[in-house]
Image (cartoon, rainbow, N blue to C red):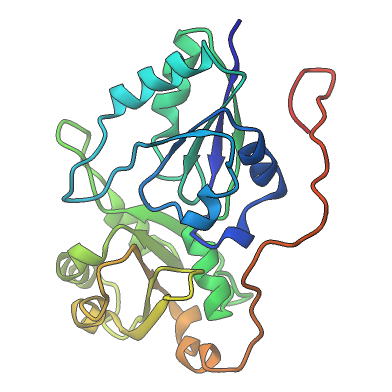
Length: 267
């Protein structure tokens, strides 16, 4: 008998940004494989699960992907509910394709549970729409990185063409990003926001223009950061300063039991 592997989005960090489906699966999980940056509040929801950290951190000791793949298959052959919990959304810079392909090759059922990706959480905290009529009609989510042996990353063409750009995992490359964007014709005065630890109490926000990007990015404390560029952020610092109310915990409504549809999928 084999179980199902659920690739679940943990969101940007705040536990109350989990989807209800994600929270219910965490409560039912027999085994939980989670990224390094998943918060303790989120992990606490998986109270009955055996927890295995399989995180990847830039410049730090990381779990090899082939090892993660095998552990998922082994767990699914022993347990009914196996959760692979990924920061943000599983299908965006989460290497979900490799895990799905391996599960499929080994005859293991899997499902995807989407999560809030960092760019959306950051924009929400800035209270700035990533699109705006007459100003921003295109948004690009990208990373400038390319692993050894991969095809070249043509991120620059995408970043120049889009009205609004969210650059993941780019704070450490701020100087080269600025240089390349300016050389490609992006105006030096393009508004920039760098958001660190989006959605968490320790979130920080720094603002400026593209020509000062390295200086702005250097103000961070080393947490997961996102670089946002585009004219929609011209007033982001002012808007961010407006008072707001903020929820800090998951709702206390009763948990609704998970059922299964005719296909066997959770609903």
